[in-house]
Length: 272
Ligand SMILES: NC(=O)c1ccc[n+]([C@@H]2O[C@H](COP(=O)([O-])OP(=O)(O)OC[C@H]3O[C@@H](n4cnc5c(N)ncnc54)[C@H](OP(=O)(O)O)[C@@H]3O)[C@@H](O)[C@H]2O)c1
Image 1 (tube, helix red, strand yellow):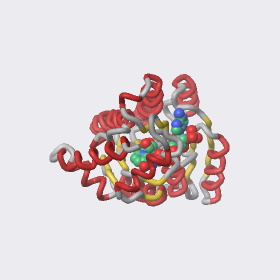
Image 2 (tube, protein in one colour; image 1 turned 120 degrees about the vertical axis):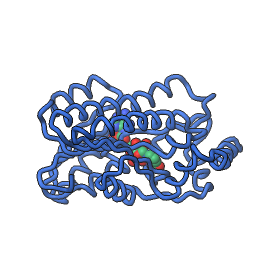
Image 3 (cartoon, helix red, strand yellow; image 1 turned 60 degrees about the vertical axis):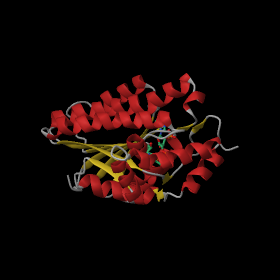
Image 4 (cartoon, helix red, strand yellow; image 1 turned 90 degrees about the vertical axis):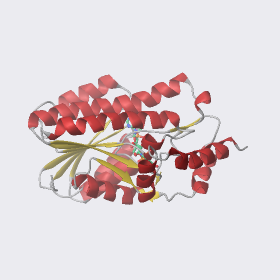
């Protein structure tokens, strides 16, 4: 699965952040992209940047919450027998607020986008790749899947669901030559914070508090570079950067060490 000529690569969430950077880092002559997201204008800009780097790129605007639209697109464009080499499932949004303040529709929206949407796309390509006998599906989870995240519990829940799926698919896919890999970043400086849903807090306060915690924020570019390097090395689960890998390792072994961070998160969230 090294970079080879004549590759088809699908990226969801390609219009922004890590998804966009994955496209730019993967773009080279011989790569044929399908770029997905809702914002057609931003998708086309990313497609043009990929073309500048010698790749070919097609775009499709769709909302992952619309299962019928996704199914129609997937069945039409990626029917069994169609060649697709790599899929990066990056589309998602996040939500900040204590669980007591989240509304039912908040849970529904994040469930449909971050979990069901990603699962629908992963399963479609899994079947296509198993039938073909090879491929790679990479999903973006989060450090929050390993540690939980008070004030972002709905997000952590959906990302943990993806861990369950991909840890299972890894084994089921291997004998068919299909690599199902999950990558889990800590904080990355992207639009995800501006685009978040906020309950009883604000964007400014949330980002201010994250900065005060003192964890380094990766750029989308360095995140994408590391993701590509590590998934192509064959890592089934990749947590980045180092502090996040350490926290993911510690969380089930010495949770009291993580509690100190979480207590700080909640304390700052509740400060008025
Ligand atoms: N940034 C972080 O700190 C961080 C940390 C850990 C994990 N991650 C994960 O990394 C991935 C990429 O996030 P990012 O930081 O790059 O965020 P981002 O810049 O906000 O990008 C999110 C992408 O998802 C797409 N998207 C959102 N809702 C969608 C929907 N309903 N239908 C279709 N597309 C949708 C957006 O496209 P449109 O707006 O065009 O629809 C956008 O392209 C996500 O899975 C995120 O959970 C991020």
